[in-house]
Image 1 (spheres, rainbow, N blue to C red):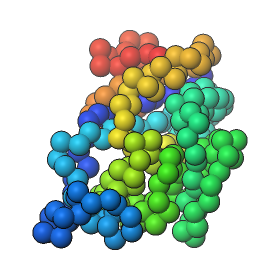
Image 2: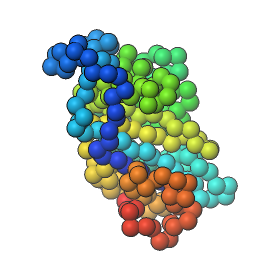
Image 3: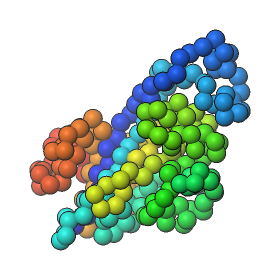
Image 4: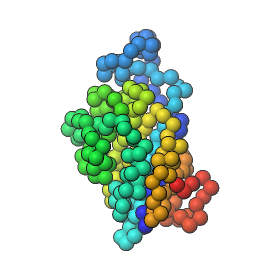
Length: 225
């Protein structure tokens, strides 16, 4: 049996890691254009960002851990593509090259990320997308926030290494939990278990791998979808 876990946090603070200068203050009210302007922009502290972490475990023999290692990718892929809707997809390769994708091509990357650094939804500037995937995630937060702020339709997805494949994390500026739950609800998967829970409750191995301990009696902070 496949188990999909959707850990969500909203709003989430993507703290600005660069000082706010007088030049930055002038840029806040200006139209954002160049990469330097996007990266230098100061975001208001009460801006609402959201993130989700999609993980998976195949509970068969042998057990496999990783969203892309599930026996049936459709139990998470169809809802995720439904959530994405008609927005344009962009791929950031390991070499830094940015290319547009059709939805079927994006589905292939989601199944097998390979050397992909990130995927973007919506009109995200190529340079900002590339900067958002450089080095440690916390060091790239200014670029990530700039990418998300490029458009109300923007979202950025990152492949995350798992034991037997990859999970996916995603960041967006729009309300996320209800939209993901609705998308999963439109694509029933009675042969799988799909669980949504607060991101904060994923802290610690025991809670993150809840399917190994409490699948038959889910805690009150976890909801099946």
